[in-house]
Length: 244
Ligand code: OAD
Image 1 (cartoon, rainbow, N blue to C red):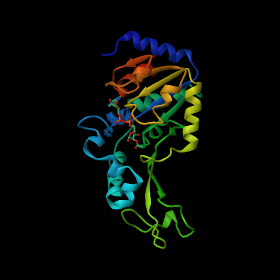
Image 2 (tube, helix red, strand yellow):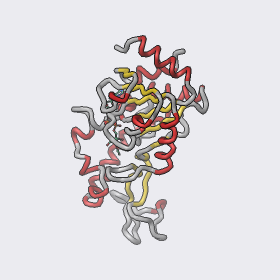
Image 3 (cartoon, rainbow, N blue to C red):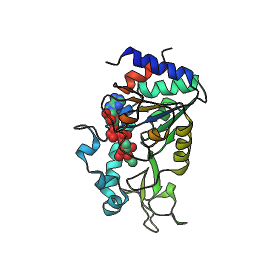
Image 4 (tube, helix red, strand yellow):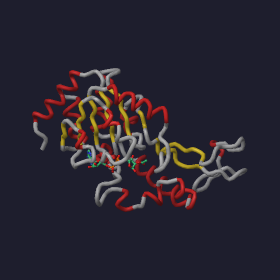
């Protein structure tokens, strides 16, 4: 149960500021049915070893297994819909143009599906494909040979999912824009992330603005928070963003 005075305080900040950043993680999609990574029991990393599935070395060692895991996740994510949390963010942004920068670690595309524009997707998009090695003139993504993964039938280059794996750089333009927005904002909502993965989590530590965490469980960023709302994203965000 979230106390009404904390909700009122955050609503007050939201009304007062024109520079808001929202940083989201896997928890915002939990109520849509997408498993998180680090929740005990239900999190993906409780069942699977990230070193076997989310690194370039793992993909090179066992491309079929890793590709099939992403196909399985694409199928799961393809069947789910944005929830009230994603929708509240999209609606707030369209009612208050230019005030909200949405930064996500999620690769599921649910913010975009809910209608959010200009989402800074720090970890890529699970539905994108890209070549594993620098493509040669023979590598034509539209004509990749069918396989798990698809491949170039001239040089053998493999397709891989367009997500950021452990040890890889984040997309530079999205990260730069997120860092600039984080430094300049007056208010940052940190929603549904454990705060365990950098540089994304670092955004909450570099902002001079108020930091509000929305999460039913403790996170590694709680010490950086001005206000912690212990609740689920799909319940708390509509109360904050859509109620005047
Ligand atoms: P985690 O799985 O680390 O954390 C999910 C967070 O969501 C936890 O703090 C949960 O308490 C919280 N949570 C669960 N249900 C929620 C709900 N209904 N509403 C709000 N919060 C809820 O996921 P991330 O922090 O996103 O990286 O993980 C960061 C990165 O680690 C991911 O982007 C992924 C992963 O390895 C890559 O794939 C590169």
